[in-house]
Length: 260
Image 1: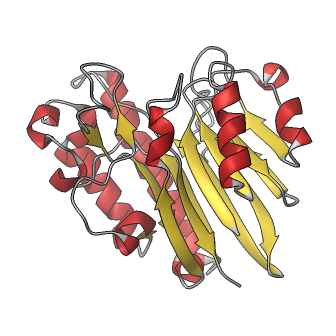
Image 2 (image 1 turned 90 degrees about the vertical axis):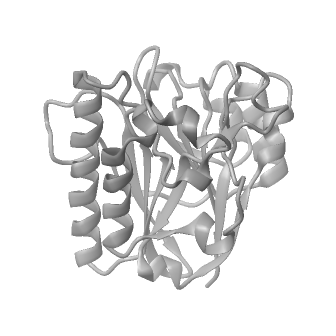
């Protein structure tokens, strides 16, 4: 089973790119972030024609997450638990059967947090604390699950081409990185780093200043896996070539494959 995550940066603007990638990569499950669409306006017909079921948690103009799945989804829930006042569409979760065993998939779009010194950075850290509590609860059930999406966190200096350029950014603050480590310290595995310890492993290249052409990227899209899911891990990849397509997202897909 192939499970992917991609911050699409607007599903309507990236509709054709997304379709082309789905046909090329053929993931069983695609978790999307920043769909920038309310649920009723999500252009799901073309994806359904490719065999995908579509579940969305949308918001007008920004945010929004979705799961496209070729397998039936159960127990679909929207919104990260822990704060009923949070109206931002940043999390959707569902369970499915993989080789007769349950697998939970959580698709997330973590807050950016900029500018520093504002309520936006506080919201980012609060959101990450809620995510940690939710991950802890899932681990206590000893179930296979994945938390994948745009984390808006650069975990280590090697995850940026020029880390010195990010010292004043919320993505690279000690508090953000510590909160990410708290997740891995629970026992969640960073799938990309299990497979690849190289420098210059990136998932995002800004549209400005020729970042893609200069390979001036960062790694902020992550797949974190419970031990039960990690036991099934069979492959990991980053489809970086998609960034060079016409009208691309500034992020690229990250995927894992799970064996029986």
